[in-house]
Length: 101
Image 1 (cartoon, rainbow, N blue to C red):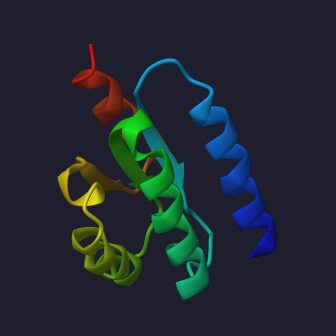
Image 2 (cartoon, rainbow, N blue to C red):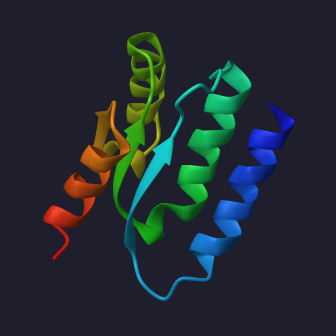
Image 3 (cartoon, one colour):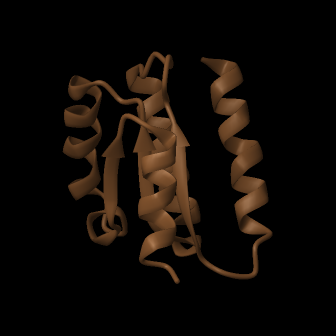
C-alpha cells in the first residue's frame, strides 16, 4: 500500500512538469484498492486535475468502480472529467488518444 502511494506521488511530480494537459490511464490490475488507496488516488486527481483531459481506469473490479464512482461526484473537478473503466490497457489507450487528436 505504501509503495503504491509513493508511486502515485512520483507520477504526480511527472504530470506537474508537463506543459500541456494529457489523457491518463491508471492500471489498477492486481491492486488491492483499500479505502486509503482510493482516498489517496482521489486526492491526487484533485491536485493534478488541471493537467488531465480524460482518465481511463484499468483493472478495477465492479465493486471498486462503484466505490470510486461514489467519491467522484463529491469532488468538483472530477465530476466533470471524462472517466471510463477498462479491462484491457490497450482499449484504454485507444479511447484516450482517439478523441484527443
